[in-house]
Image (cartoon, rainbow, N blue to C red):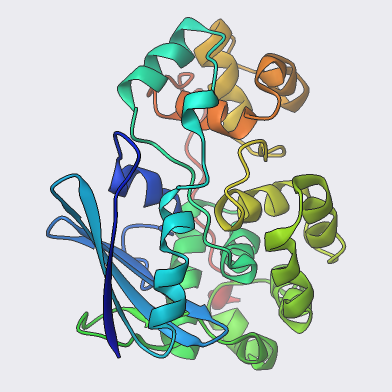
Amino acid sequence: MHLTRTWTPPGAYDLPGSLAVLARGPYDPTFQVHAGSVWRTTRLRSGPATLRLTPASGRVRAEAWGAGAQEVLDGLPALLGEGDAPEEFVPRHRVVAESHRRHPGLRLTRTGRVLESLVPAILEQKITSIEAYRSWRHLVRKFGEPAPGPHPSLHVVPEPRTWVRIPSWEWHRANVDSKRSDAIVRAAQRSSRMEEAAAMALPEALARLQAIPGVGPWTAAEALQRSNGAADAVTVGDLHLPRTVGYALTGERNTDDAGMLALLEPYRGQRHRAARLLTLTGLHPPRRRPRRQPGDITRL
């Protein structure tokens, strides 16, 4: 099945910038940018789908393939940020105002698919991004399926029951320890409960995800930022974000979570958007210690 649709944004719109948070590294088998188009795969209630998004004369042209083609096009406005309201954001700091001015087309995406965002967030717990991206690629390519449509290298994420059935030695080969793999299995076993969080208010959605052992505030916020377009889902427990926020707003190099939350308090209701705008400034504290080297449990 091959279907098309167009969407007209209400104002300035940055397609790759708005959807960039969905990419898990430059070689994500579920997300690629090629020749000006954004390609994304997903697994919906109606089946797998591949989506190609291309800017065209102030509009976004969407093409969809697969059993889930109609459903993914029905959700296109939400994915592209139609339900977001960046114009309601009020900058309280000069650096935030400048970033907001420089990125007028940035909107928060809402995929509506919780498990697809939760699994890679669990993989990213307490390890480097490079390690997590490699694990994600390995698992999706091995246990997912080739994506419908013309893109030759895209894959669709595994079904929930497939995540549950991955044997322990395959998690090991993917460089995923038992703590993270167990959390993914528990979430997949309760996939229906997880997906219900897409329609919940943020406090209830956070509680629903954190009811899974191994899913804490950091992981839940990272997932809901993408699945729910949650403008206030500020990430706590991150190694870099508090320092970035603190350095950008005050010049302080060692801001902790409490300090970050205090600085973002004027943006309550929009704290995630404020933090994201700050990460786009390029203002980061100087590195004082060597970069952490990726680990590899597959050699053990």
